[in-house]
Amino acid sequence: MTGPHATGPGDDEPEIAIEVRGLRSQFGDHVVHDNLDLSVRRGEILGVVGGSGSGKSVLLNTIIGLKSPDAGTVKVLGHDVETASEARRTEVGRRSGVLFQHGALFSNLTVRENVAAPMWEHTRLPHGEIDELADLKIRLVGLKIEHGDLKPSELSGGMRKRVGLARALALDPELLFLDEPTSGLDPIGAADFDSLILELSRSLTLTVLMITHDLDTLYTITDRVAVLADKRVVATEPVRELEKSDHPWIREYFLGPRGRAAKAAVQT
Image 1 (cartoon, rainbow, N blue to C red):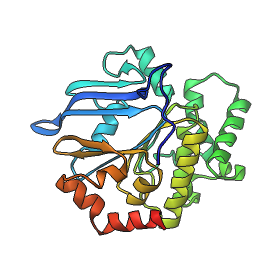
Image 2 (image 1 turned 135 degrees about the vertical axis):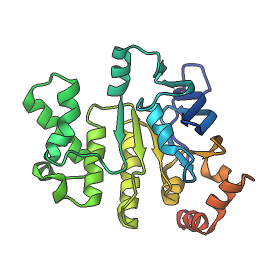
Image 3 (image 1 turned 180 degrees about the vertical axis):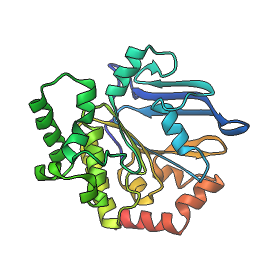
Image 4 (image 1 turned 30 degrees about the vertical axis):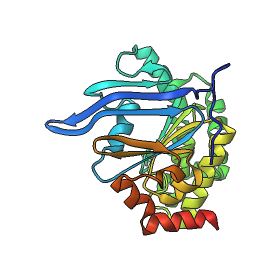
């Protein structure tokens, strides 16, 4: 599939929302990334895959500013995450939403209070308006308003994922970061969540960077997939192009039994 990649006036090249150049990430003597490059186009859904220890979460944490690069540059929405002023970093943060793998919801708050939390922190809207906007986001992700009164422990795993997504969308971000969004969901729940992400990305014109190992997700909703191996991004292509790669890890991942099954499911 091909996403609605935005371009500048008179320019055939897609506009870049996230640009990583020459990234080096290490912990002590252990080097995770070495001279890693990655570009994320505006309006696309980009999946990021890689084997265990390839540094998928480290890359995500570096892009969203939770880890500093040991070398290289990371630009988000045109701003270097390391050298930007505090005000500029706050602005970029407000224009970004993050859904962490396990939701990271506040267990002592209701669903509505969880979704409203970013608005309490970053806006000066009246209390009543914040509650109304929180209810809007709750409905946006396919939940009912009455779910807003419940605590996270009273919800199913799939519903908690949706609450986390609603909170990530609370400030109407341009960028959406997803860390293993379908992890722990049954196949039907995962397919429903994939459909929701695709629908929201199109209707809200989101740029989505998604860490995932779910082959069904990669085949059904991503525009391109970036493959982490050998301490860098070895390919960034649509899934169909990656199937032609001669890289051993890519071939094993996409052309192995699970990859063939995911491809067949899309074709039926």
